[in-house]
Image (cartoon, rainbow, N blue to C red; front, top):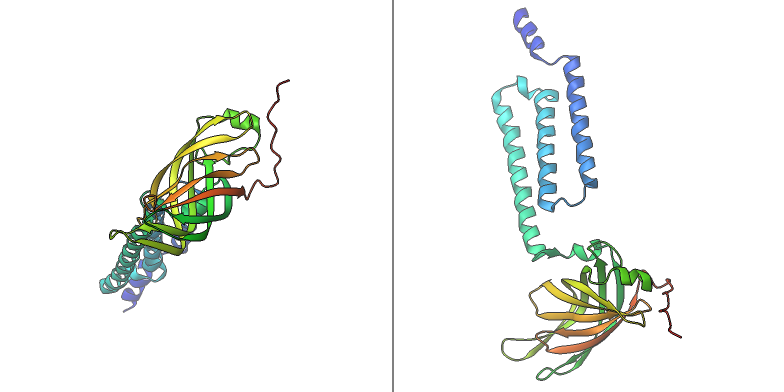
Length: 272
């Protein structure tokens, strides 16, 4: 009996082993925190890495601090089966909701994540025959040069970015669509989000700058041409045409900047 107790006690980890395990757990925890500060990791990869680290930590704690390594194997199956089942359910839900939330290559969160210049304002959406009616809506727009820089105000800075690529997104709360049966439908509430790429044009003598946009995707499949082209005005505002629903409706946009309203544009040079 004494030999059995001695063997059982000897099979358990020593204090040094517990210290080593604590250090390993601390390192894994530090890596879990550090991964939050790494940009550009896709959501699925990010969550998969965190789940794998959590499984490793769970296994270490269960095997040593809960002594599963030294107990009957059936307890290992109970704990291991539970964590695998829970992880499978979490991953399945992540895949399901990530698929539903995506719109092509962009998601709703991208509107808030773009670090560019933002504009907002109201618009009057007017139906084109056979669509009828006038509806007031609110639009938010964000544009970024080279994917991460605000659009400049001063004339000198604008001249340096002629021809540069831009990315952007817009949110509208009212759109009008031409239905398959030939009738018109107005969808309000929103926000209806649209994402696009584009390119900056030349700078005019007055300091304004034209740009062109190519739509990437829509939130719900509705057909909209959000400002196929527009103008960045000298005072930092944006103006351009908005067509929705295969040109079922039209609106003229004249938006004021949100983040650069206090900036003072550099006037264009005059010729004597």
